[in-house]
Length: 236
Image (cartoon, rainbow, N blue to C red; front, top):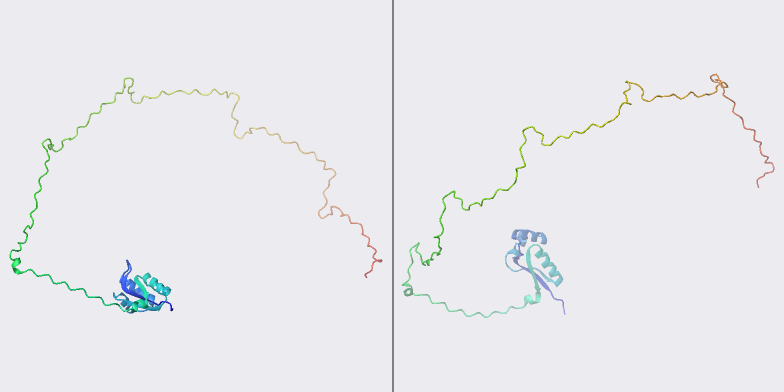
């Protein structure tokens, strides 16, 4: 038994939120065709865009077309080519009888502005306003409740004259420091007595100064090193 063959078709129905001009441009880019070549796909008619493919391939076509904004479908080719049964026509209902001119003899057209239906009168609400009156402009509607003054005893308080110190100044006694043993030295005087150290007692009687260029002393020479006897050595 051969595998089922499918065909992919569109009906021109757009996906939700898609615009026809944008979908036409995307279809042209998808199928690599000029926009006028893909325009029939948006005409509202059934247009087959691929036939004789497997189901997996048909599903790929549907996904690609719907991605650009056009609703797409696929169906079995064998089912699509099956003859469509001719439907039995439904019986035509008999036309309703038209009203005769005699039946419209009592009908008339009211002039423009005529009230066709009289509005039912609405009884006014029964509200007793005998206890209410309107106060003159500027009248205080709500009287402010008087606030009793605070009872503060100020009999022990008085106001001092201008310039009087409100806080009594307390004299701070000077510290009793004995400075009788101190005096001020004259400008430039050493405050600390400096005693220079005694000179060093160095005996230089045995020292002398050599003339310029004289040798200060002979460098001791090393004793001659004897040459070792190698007469008994030979190379093999």
